[in-house]
Amino acid sequence: MREYKLLFAGPMGAGKTTAIAAISDAAPVRTEAVNSDRVQHSKELTTVGFDYGEIALDGGDRLRLYGMPGQDRFDFMWKVASEGALGVVLLSDNSRPEPLKDLALYVESFRAMAERGAMVIGIGRLGSGHTSVESYTAWLAGQGLSLPVFTVDVRRRDDVLLLLDALLYQIEAARLLADTPHA
Amino acid sequence: MSAQVPKARKITCIGFDWRAEVSLKETLALLRGKTREAWQYSDELTADVVVYETHNVLAQAMVRRSAAENTGRVFFPSSSEDDSVLTLRYPFGASRLVACLDSASLQLQGRVPATEQAEAPSLCQRLDDALRAPGTLAVSIRAGDQQGWLRLPERELHWSQPLGVDEIAGLLSGEVEVEALGPTEGAALRRLEAAARHPAPAEGLLWAIGIARSKGSLLPRLDIARPCRLRRWPDFGAIGRRSLDIRCASLLTQRELAPSHLAMMAGIPLGVLGNFLNACALVGVLEPGKALPAAAPAPQAHALPQESGLGSVLRRIRTALAIGQ
Ligand SMILES: Nc1nc2c(ncn2[C@@H]2O[C@H](COP(=O)(O)OP(=O)(O)O)[C@@H](O)[C@H]2O)c(=O)[nH]1
Ligand SMILES: [Mg+2]
Image 1 (tube, chains in turn green, yellow):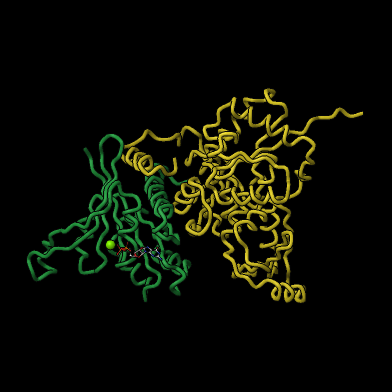
Image 2 (cartoon, rainbow over the protein chains, first blue to last red):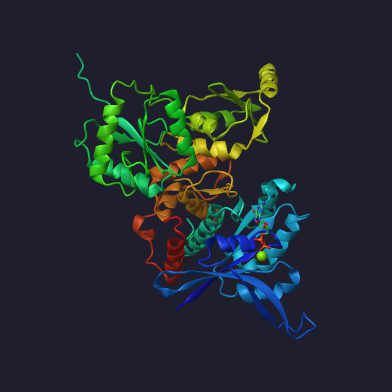
């Protein structure tokens, strides 16, 4: 059996648990992980929680879905989780005070995935904030990134599927283009 | 005396994946001579017969509107709880399709076909021309008793009445007048501004017009051999999308490609791709690439590669979630 993983990241309340619940075979579970990062944390062992869900694939393989905690002090968790991940869904809560600052933090944390296109951004609660979709795409363009940015409400399963559909095509397109010489 | 050549009836489908479109076209070609009347596939929502995916909101609205206006057009849903309703589900079986078309022929008898000159430019093209005409300050859009205006350069859209999905469906299947207004039409501009006060997202309407009102032809300003790219993703969270739109956007945001090349890489016929490109152009996200026009690469150069390990994983995830198949 082989295992693959997808990450869901974003600030608290952005909808990570909701999105995972929409597509996971079973209700997501909250799991504790041991923090063994001695440099960043004074206590040798602390625990952090993350959401976990999974999807069974044909052939007996498994897709693991991780909802990564939002606080930046858990940055080390992201690094561990990113290793070998297929891609990441970033969820933004546009009603927060500085959504573009949140975006910057997550893009930085998952820079490698952003650069190979394996990232999509879902903006929730668009109308409850003052940041426009164009501001997100303009900020990304300033970073040399052209990633899918969609307004979503992840309480609708179809919106979660849109994010995954785009993420899978992003990964596929990057692979296809890597094999294709420039015109 | 001129021989009366029977004109082919038109059929279209809404809400299905592009594979269903291609399959419908191919099945129609195979059925030539086996139906009461001749049939041809059309991209226009004004076709005599519409096959629609039952859950598609736009299609539902069109069915309601057509019934209310007594247009006599015939709709076949992909499923129905009522056993007496003829349904057409993808993959379309030949004998079921014949039964549906013949039933439609009977229902359509005596109906005056929509007068539509094939030579007239598509709504997509008229709107694109108006938006790009030098000096345009706003574009007036009139459909029935709906009056709208699209102000440039912000592309803010306002209507005289709030529009629901029914009205938008009407707009997309009926007569639409488009007019570019420049600085010399100050009075008309002021009238529009006063009449149309209900803001609506422009991107969704422009996208839908590109997809549904292109008459199956690429905008004249686009060229299948000239590389182009998307400067950003359309917001598919806010506008109706098909899986093929997402697939093509992934490629065109990551690399500039000539449409002919894109069609090959995405494995999508150019005829189907044209509407996507028109919609991107109308929304304003398509821009010319920097590379010189290239001869289309030889097909074998990019024949779909053997499925790699990653390809197989992606495909199995799609299967598990039932998306984009
Ligand atoms: N309006 C709105 N509410 C949402 C959205 N996504 C999640 N919520 C709600 O926000 C709350 C927190 O969501 P949750 O999934 O627990 O966020 P998490 O902290 O990222 O895991 C729940 O009550 C959700 O129903 C969204 O896109 N729009
Ligand atoms: Mg949570």
